[in-house]
Each structure stands twice: as structure tokens, then as C-alpha cells.
Image (cartoon, rainbow, N blue to C red; front, side):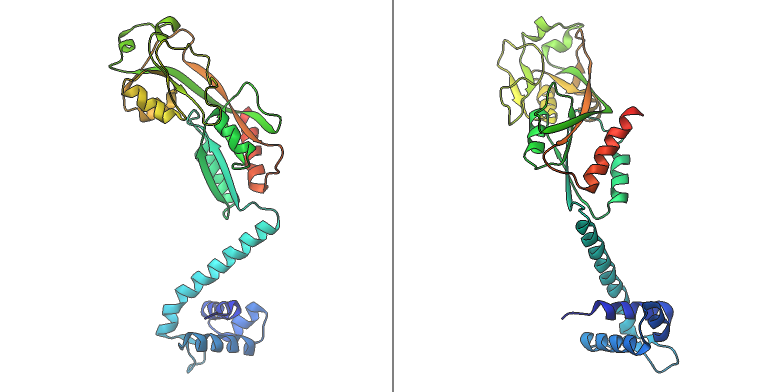
Length: 294
């Protein structure tokens, strides 16, 4: 059964203002129109919502029971109208953001809180990908914006800008690994043990770092969390984000003392130059870029 939004609004206003006449004035309608709308609602519900025996209408027990539910319907209707209005203005219904485990996102909570406040109807999706995988998600249109460790070059259709964040990397092994007993390690020593390397799904076999090749067969994974666990199990050494190890390795890893390490990498925000961003995506991109100088 369908209930008229006008009848639901007339009911809520009558409850709030205490009379049919006051509700009519608030809604800009005649008192008879409001009274008839509520009467039709009562017929549709099969319930008497108001006791009309007194000078002013008084909620019945059924009316009090229905009040909260009707207010919920009106709130949902308002949310629907606002969402439709945003879409009519070009507001994207969904924004997909690619994130990297390399980035500690120190201001992530603040950025997302402001995004939520500005665009409360937006559906936000966060996915994790690294290097070429992140770029591929932007190229394919699967994602709108991406944050990743700065790359040496990007495809022409991918726009990019360096932001304020930095990604710090160190070389790590498990405590039972032979290299853990070394006070200092160079690339020649590293080459004698298995390397655990990042290997993206779309660019398999393309190096994602300039670390030495290992005399042992390398193991690879498409994300740093897997590499961190593999290193903790003692399967080899790996270049890992230091914040990730500090927060999630649980003391299972030792950072190696290697010349030139730890390293700091810039972080880029990327987007497609072939697809226009909606208002939310544009605002978020501008926010990332604007804060790089702070």
C-alpha cells in the first residue's frame, strides 16, 4: 500500500504544531486539505491516529506508535530527494580511492571526515593496490583517484601531483634469519639470500625497486602485508614500509643496517585525464594538492 508523502508530512506537522490549522499554515495549504490528507492516511493504515473529541487533536496510542515510523519515512524521503538533487547537479554516486600500504596516511581521518561532512550521500570505496596495479585501476576507470609511492613515469592519460605525505622504507628480516645476526649488511650480502619483492599483477616481472638480484629464487607478492608476513616467517629479506612494520609486525622483524637505508619516497595522487571527476572527486583531489605545501 502506498502512503502519500503529503499525508505523512501533514501528520508530522500536526503533531509538532498541535493543530490542523497550524499545520496547514506551515504547509501553505487549507485546513480542509490537511484534515482530508490525514483522514485518508488513517483509512490507508486502518488506524485512528488522532482523538478529535477535544478542541485540538490528540494522538491516540496507535498515533504515538506510528509517529516514529512516519518520521523515519519522511527522513528517508528527504535523503532520497537530496541524493537525487546532487546527481542532477553532476554529483557522482560513488567514489573509488586507491590506497597504498606504503603510505601512513597521517591526515587520512581528517580528510575523510571532511569528505563525509561535505558529501554525506556519497558512497566511498577504498581499495588497496601498488605501483602498476594502482595505475591500471585509474586507467580502466575502476577507480577515480589513487595514492601511491611516486613513480619514475606515468602513462600520458594519467595525471599526477606530489602531495605532502612521505613513504619511508627499510630493509627487514625475521629474527631467526641469518642476516639478523649481522651488525651491518651490504648489497653483496643481501644478494646471498632470498629476496621478497613486490610484484604487481599487471606488470609481472617488471622490477618495482632497484634492489640487488638474489642468487636464490625470489619470492613475490602483490602487497606489502603479504611480504611482511613472509619476512616474519624467515623466508627472506624485504623492503617494507616502516610504519607498517611498526604498527603491525608485532616485533617479529629486525631492520637491517644497510648503506643508503632507510629510504624516503614521495607520494603522488593520480587521476585519469580522460575522465572528468565529479564534485566529490574534484574536491578531494584539490584537498590533497592544496595540503602539500603545508
